[in-house]
Image (cartoon, rainbow, N blue to C red; front, side, top):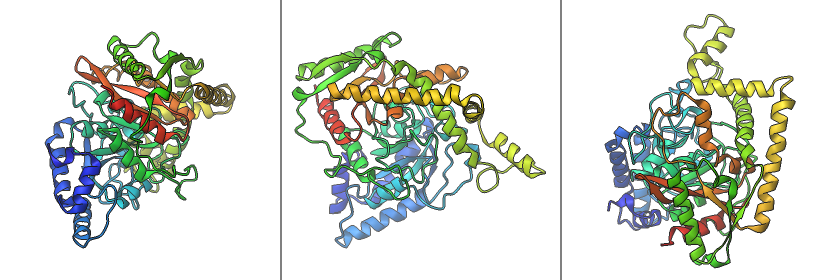
Length: 475
């Protein structure tokens, strides 16, 4: 076992004691990533800054200074996080040469805890997608089968963790973009309560559902990373207070006192046989461990995807308006007038999916259609939020699959946007409602991993991580 395959807490402890060198760990991580180049998970590296940061940590350790909970641990950031020492592209031609003048709060907090960003991961451009096929640069391949997608939009982040190149990566989850690739790649993917991690310095997609979270090999590792990032930030007014007890899972979580609701709408027709069997097997383990397991129905869940694909494009169309070819990002060399510059810069810089979402969003917000689409979607959104609240009056947690299927073939859904959007049918509701949710590997079918989704009440992140650790340890 290589040093980077150890639990994150062990790596940090060994760096702090001087047993491991942060600089050597960074070199090992970069070597691992370069050796796995065939999977096309990495857009760019931040080698110079990473090695400088590692050298500083090693010097501080030698001087007897205390570093932090992530001392010397290398990680990969999804390429929609602003970072210094390299480019931030959001996997879009619009930003292919953009170098950020400051860093995302999440990156700053991870670095303050001693972690070191070594590379930027591929994603669906602007995080618009479920397969990482919408990247303007290349398609990331699934570590379990290179003919299949890794999920999206945080596909590169999930892939590097599954490949054991780095101990953890960070991603964004707007409608399932951490949980879906975690399920497809067989790693832990955590979507915190909305507002628990600052969005400052992260390229915006849909501001009312964007969430920042970790992808890691174990629940303990994911919790340690979340703990470093969580909490209020004056640069993001939507952030909330962190739990005073932190986010490390309790080691004494008692499953027999737990009430678990199995979401009926997620276990219905359309679920692949292998997925259904794996989820049912996991649920049976809960029962055998003494948990009280019953079915629960949230009647409005079948409407969640429609709500999401009205609200999300509306916010996308607003957020992407800033990329106009004037201040930063791609500016058309062919433009002869200011009006030409606006039109040509956006035409050349945006890919097909970004244009599709901009047009849908502009349409649902336009005069005469706002009441018919956007306002109705927000009304149903409130209904979904209330149904979650009612369910959590009876249950501690809700469970179901992450997706109705395992990772699909590259190219299988690219010609059918609606079929691609259906990949998110089981994940978008937790974003609409703001509830924390996790993807936990529980089995597989035909050599491909399957993730169990566990959803908790808002702000119950520590409890969700605790039950997830207890479930992870069930035999």
